[in-house]
Image 1 (tube, helix red, strand yellow):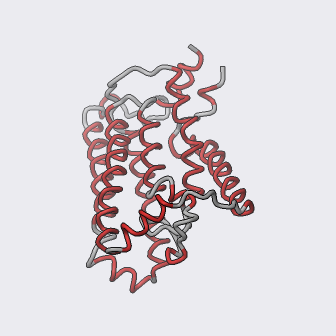
Image 2: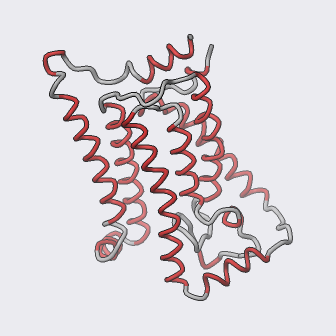
Image 3: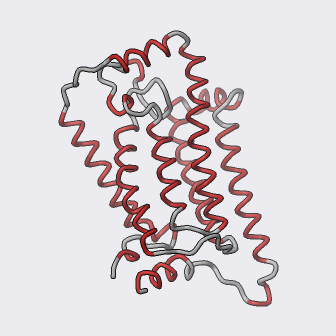
Length: 253
């Protein structure tokens, strides 16, 4: 009972309340804000990263500058979406239970580790990698387990957060992200197959044939594992600041 009260206070109390006389007009505005955030999110992912817009932006900002600006923009839009879902009218689809809070708390650790091992490594199959020309199919790292580590992390993050957030706005938010992540894997596979041509099936076959255990380079392995753990702690501490819900407090008796 205590845990449930703490969650309700964290998940419902932080919602912006309006005076009773203005209540009829505000829900529609909040839904419009939620819809607008989604439209901007999809526009940024469907327009900015495709011709003819992307080549122009890359020429102006340089490839690294474009990646940095696009990443910051994506984070800003994601924050807007989370706040818009938080402020949307609460329409319950299922009731909250204490065990549901454990799902994202436990799932976020592998999510953070996947991100730590998947960002900035050679990966010719997806986005988020660097120095793809150095990719070694006999030492594929996390790419040998999943071609799209960032999208896998996004999918797990989405599914885990649906469980304790059984209201309409959050189900739409996280459900859309889950579907978007799965669809993105298929779309990127098609694009990469087209771009790589015959190199695509050769790389996939080389990874599957590679059966000898690779020697672990412990220094980068431990560095990335530590980065994943640090990210997990940072997200747990910062979570109340950008969502209004403290996942640690909800687990305390």
